[in-house]
Length: 294
Ligand SMILES: *[C@@H]1O[C@H](CO)[C@@H](O)[C@H](O)[C@H]1NC(C)=O
Image (cartoon, rainbow, N blue to C red; front, side, top):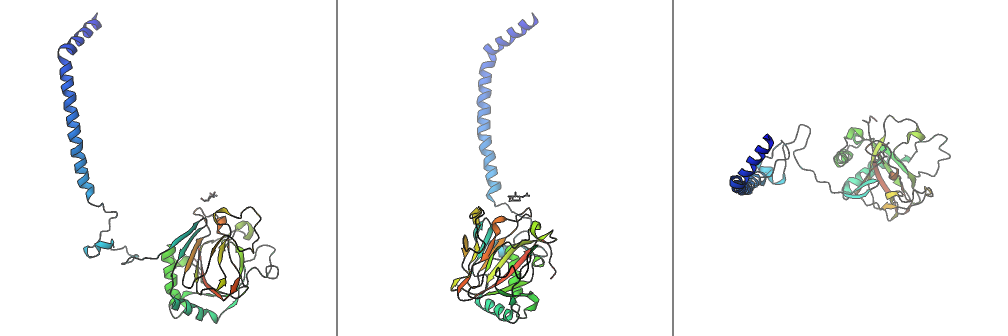
């Protein structure tokens, strides 16, 4: 009985009184919501109309146009621009046109000429100098930036660190190589696979090649496995196939041998095609995952 009374009471109110008020209340909330929201989005617009500052370091007014910030203790007070082209993601390979000037290249060749010796290989189990003859036929010399009194290698090394964002201390000394007609380097990995070379305390992470000369014909840097091609097991390591980069004086080529998880990128296999005409000079910087004290 009690329930019935309440129900009856409620339906009376609905009919005689509540229905128009509910209608009015609805209109009120609709209008309030409508204007309220446009008001809110307006104030939001004002707030974000000003470009949000991406960092806590703030531009000084004089430099505001190019977003220059007063840098941290170890940073730069200028903006570096090093143009590059992504040649491939598999492997991660980047091309740096006009990385060095012709004068810088000639100067590096001049100091390297004095110390040239036949290039050597890191040998795997069972390999000897005799049975690996012919895999790498160039001549070369290792030079530290400090060996170059002209300061050129110092400038180049600094620039490589900026381009790679890997500190200079992780780099090996430059290996300056000369390939004469017929000379080449069969396809290989710069990283040392622990299953072939044993455990590695320090691994080659990336390689930066600076071409010191043009080559009239041949001498390309090749990546036979680029984008997974030629990986069916049939590839012969002397074959010059896949993605090939023709050397041009002053241009740089950077590629990474390791994935970010530290394992070797199988597509980073690369080699130097035989020089057919002319002479190829290249400065190689191998960059390690550990600090390197040569
Ligand atoms: C490492 O990373 C590569 C690329 O992302 C991936 O293909 C591979 O499976 C990873 N290896 C391990 C052991 O995590």
